[in-house]
Length: 295
Image (cartoon, rainbow, N blue to C red):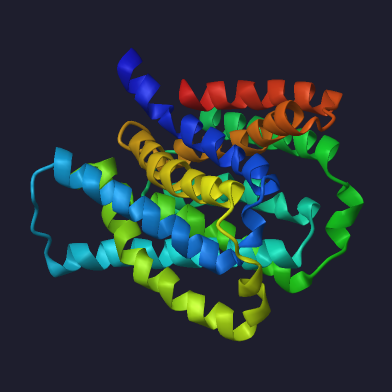
């Protein structure tokens, strides 16, 4: 049971890796146009995952219905990341934090309604505490008044991105049960590569000047490697691994750790100030995650 509970908490590692993307972005990967960066990230991550699958799992023959399920996950993934990148570009940091708060909520709702997962009082309380704790943390980092400004279309894209990533997470559960987290993450990612690739010429057509600033500097190469190897291959495997041992609605609560890790890494590597909100909100968040994980 202790081993199962430990593996059920694997998404915490994934959320921590995603939190590190905040620091990586400061180190220079924004010099690459967002959708092109997403394609490079996905292509590298898919290659690594495919090599891992071929080396560790037996060859399988999927029927058409299973390939359609993998393809559906690829569509959800493409929609989630592309709208996230574009929505973030149209909004401010305060509005971008909506993505972090709403994704676990959508996962909870989809897990209960689509998969028939049981919503216990302990899980409900834990999720509510984790939500409150995350909002307290974000209030110390971002200007709450800025939520009213910015682009309405950008906020709408972020809301849609939250829903799409929740769907990418929850609807993978049947495939994870039948096969494994590694295989599900691999084939969904591989099938999304051409979808992301199709967005690159569109981005070039809309903003050709952005491609002139791309340079293969060390920070840019390091950022692409981080995004492909860690934020994609390793993180998505850990994210799906948790759903081998826990409900999708319970896994979503670990997503709340992402901004906490990002703020801590920003303080360590970028010398950014940290307020008391991080300590108080982080403590409430930790209690909420503990309640859900021990349900």
